[in-house]
Image (cartoon, rainbow, N blue to C red; front, side):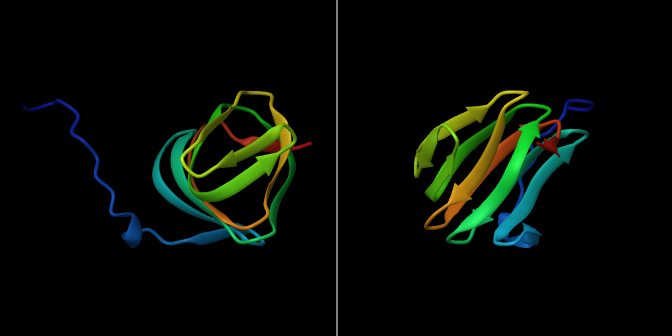
Length: 108
């Protein structure tokens, strides 16, 4: 049908990994303005320093686990960080996470 948006299929293997912080790699799957879908790979012991979310972040852990100030999200589980959420993220043993984000972050 003409004029109707089509599904977007992404071959994740074709997207490059970019090291955003030491031990934290991003693979952007989709981006539209301030909204994005990102695969995040954490090396064992990786940390994202304390920051504030300006928008919403939802994560689904595909492998391993990530922890913040309020708990740990492990393989097969979901967590949401609402706008204004402040936290530090760590991955003791490494992880693979699908993150859906709106807005950015700022240091806290």
